[in-house]
Image 1 (cartoon, protein in one colour):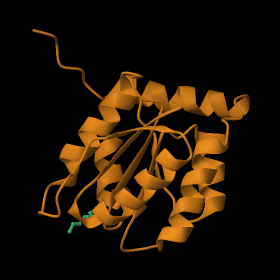
Image 2 (cartoon, rainbow, N blue to C red; image 1 turned 30 degrees about the vertical axis):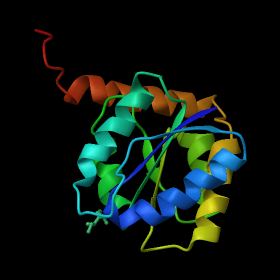
Image 3 (tube, protein in one colour; image 1 turned 180 degrees about the vertical axis):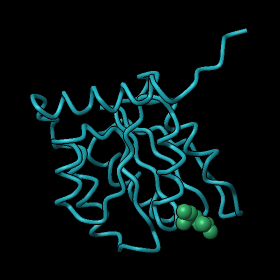
Length: 154
Ligand code: RB5
């Protein structure tokens, strides 16, 4: 499975921990930055990771900032992205089964690394249930089609 990962400066320490953990487990991890502790703007990282999921070059994404909130709000502006903020394993499990979430977001300033790794493992190993949940995902997609304008290609 190919995993896209990214963080701002507020999430870089946890990003490094998650990346090492996933590589040890044999996942193919693509790191979209940030690569230094210098202050940066989380939407720039959200965009890179989200586009790699939307165009299917990566399977699932993980985004980390101080709270996990801003980086997820930005990712959810991209069509086809369902980024879910999870700070417990129940939510990580439920959001894969019910929402077919394709990006996990977490806050480095909110939870510790051991819990974060359990959440990551749960998110990556839980399958979407489909069925009645697919109907709801289809409705989310309809909302994107109805309200998000696509710029004409030049
Ligand atoms: C950066 O200071 C901080 O605002 C960011 O990491 C994140 O928490 C935003 O939601």
